[in-house]
Amino acid sequence: MKSTIIDKAVTQFLLSLRQRNASKHTIKAYSGDLAEFSAYVGSRSWKEIDHVSVRGFLSHLYEKGLGKRERN
Image (tube, rainbow, N blue to C red; front, side):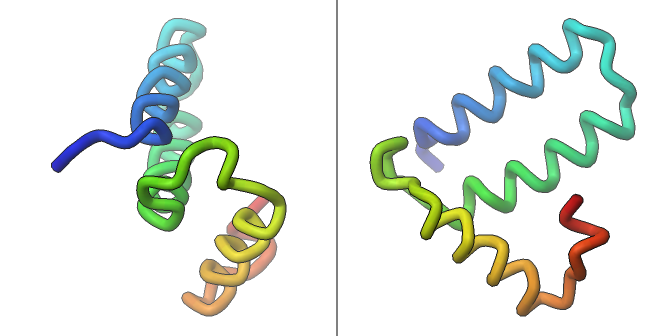
């Protein structure tokens, strides 16, 4: 599977959290959420990801049964 620009950014962000000694729970939470977002946006470029894309992702989470509390 080819790594997208979003996948690469997520990897870098998670690495920066580890370097700053973020808790394993924080890293795990970000990792799961960002992996799901990356899968949702697919191979879109940064310029193609706007507020409508983010709202679509949040709607996707809502449809899966995740309430506001889980998204915070």
